[in-house]
Length: 514
Image (cartoon, rainbow, N blue to C red):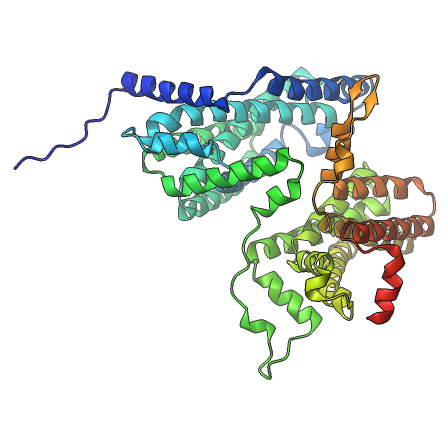
């Protein structure tokens, strides 16, 4: 009795067959059209002409906001570069778990999976091309940020090491992106731990070495060389069923994003709450208190809760540093801290979504407010306030930035910023479908700018936070800034209620009935 084994096709034949499949798929309409490429090019041109060129010109004619001499470059560059490489590696791994370089159109993946070709044949070319794109984009983005924010490229003595460092970090980002998708969770944790431990050793050694900057540039390149080949060798054994699910979810998210409902696209990547269901109920059958319910619901999504537990104190410390008005660029610290608190406020639990559902489905849940706002908002308000002021208190205790005599005004500014962030978060979470009036054309001498309105609607929370911080920074009085923040937050709450269908006329009557 003889058995036949499938013979792997030669590389040239496999390449030709994959190309034929892609050509057939492109004739179905999967290929990008000229009009589809023209609109992104038009937006890039607008961004370049009206934002990038003025910013580059202003940077070239003025001193840099931050000087590399403050970190003792190049002698003290190794710890900073190692920390940046670790952050990029971990971020690339995390991005790969959600949306990796091997995510393709579901139909094309299904066709390729139905053949006798090895996954390495049809996924290897896609991976190499997308990693090259990712590395190039990361390199350009890091170089642009370094040029605009620092004077790294102003002198030949720092420009060449800086370029080598950015090239190494870009290679690490691309390799970690692929590793995060093709390797198992255990391997990702092992890589993250190994990279963190190695970075500590290299930072300690490179900080005292005379040529530490070249060591800091060499380590990311070696890390990319160590991570990239094993990631490519894992392509033949990739879990195709999981890749198909990721591709289907990415296709649905892309469709949501292109049709204007970006928050629905992000909802596809929310972790499903699990566990602790019985912890919401006491032994006598009654529900627990409002804060206890919020804590339990936060623990049902431990990853998001852990991210919030990190972001809120860090954002509070940065916010306190900026609100105190000391150091270099306090407004940037203020804005960065407010954005960090804003992000953390959305990850403290799923009570925001529950509040939106109860407000938008009044016929199902009834129009009786009762304890609805208190039940839904007690935990987010307490958690955000406590986390922010914890970070600010640590900043004040260690006396990193608080000057004498400004404690009262700093507390007012931090409290006003927290209120503004909570109002912006309420506005964001009450968002429903894209309003039709935003699609109406806005004709200007520079073309149709209706896309800017859609972008502002998609990221309205960030727009409110950054605009509010800029206005608060422009007000000379701390009390006036706090009052302005409260007014902006009240406006956000009113706009959020209008989004859910709660008109102002019926609001007071509903409150009285509640």
